[in-house]
Length: 275
Ligand SMILES: [Zn+2]
Ligand SMILES: [Zn+2]
Image (cartoon, rainbow, N blue to C red; front, side, top):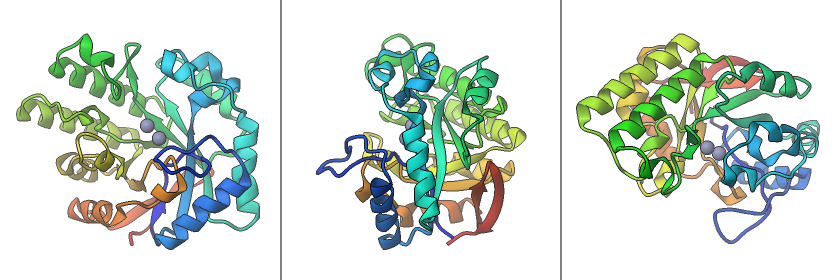
């Protein structure tokens, strides 16, 4: 089985980012693209920070500028896709909300999530994946340390089922020395193993300055050793990117020792043969 468990429901576009379109017609276009790429099941993971119902969890100015869409419309579009027999799952990309996980889960409880995807984009109020962001305040070493501390806390929080782009902090290609990288990898893998969350192998990093898959081979192998499950992810923001570059992602998974992929239904995980 091949899944793509990270994408943002958008309308048609020439570029990499389509306009917001939370409709069943958009769900159908993404499902059609999945079929042509040999992807068996897709999961939508719109950002929390698009939804006005969740605005009390959104603080960063960039994220606040995205607010204004309706959570009900998004969920209804995906649920209607399911009703029409499409192999689609309902997810949400959730930024870490230290200390407020219970409050967020309560707000999300009425919706039929298949899984929640956890991301660290913002640390100490500054973006890791945008410039200048956190990079103007801290050294590369300290950005990495603060980022992976936040990842460990998110894993342990019980908020999410899968961690997205686990080493997003490498996005601009800046890294501390290799012994420090290895130490961060070891700590992150231990945290995901202990928490029982899965990690995604994302091809989005191939389209970013770093030009690599997330996570690094060493980090993924350590996650495998710690017993973490794995999913596949394109982080598509336009239908054409669904399943993009998946042969490379499958190769990375197999090299790390994965023979199964984690599949979710109603926030319950199970393993299916990979491929
Ligand atoms: Zn993300
Ligand atoms: Zn995303």
